[in-house]
Image (cartoon, chains in turn orange, blue):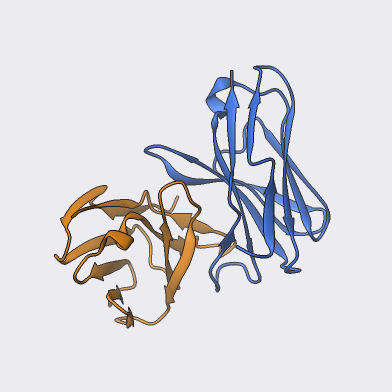
Length: 111
Length: 113
């Protein structure tokens, strides 16, 4: 079946630094979604990318969908303590009935 | 998020007892999902529903059943709880299958002792 993998699993970041987390699918995706889960909270939908090579920005967060639509990345600029949490990517299964979530990247920020 | 509530928020139960978790939505969304979240495993789909009385299995459905008799309610039942079912359970809703983001409930932390 479809697999969605994220690297790294953990990311320790100094406050103010940039970092990137990556999402890779075993199959071509019609779209990719990103979610954020704060510690003790629930996943919250951030954004969806649909087009090959698409880039979208949300303040300090930049999301990119790969040209082959099999990978995606999330880049955070000037990390803040409010960025702490786990970031998940998710892509539709081939049948299109449901999403497959990656294992997530847990972000820890050092002040 | 507004529009989706899960109950109970926390529950401790004994091995072998039946447990039912409830997900209630006020958004009139067609699709509803039950996930479990465990350390090292991310979010895994248990069951989902694409309409009243229409449900299907996810990747970790063994030991779980679901029912959806009304658009707004999606129930998850553990027929005979086991310690391996200790987890955080999230319900999610969406208006379309996969073309829009899911809205998640606040979760139910279930402990089976």
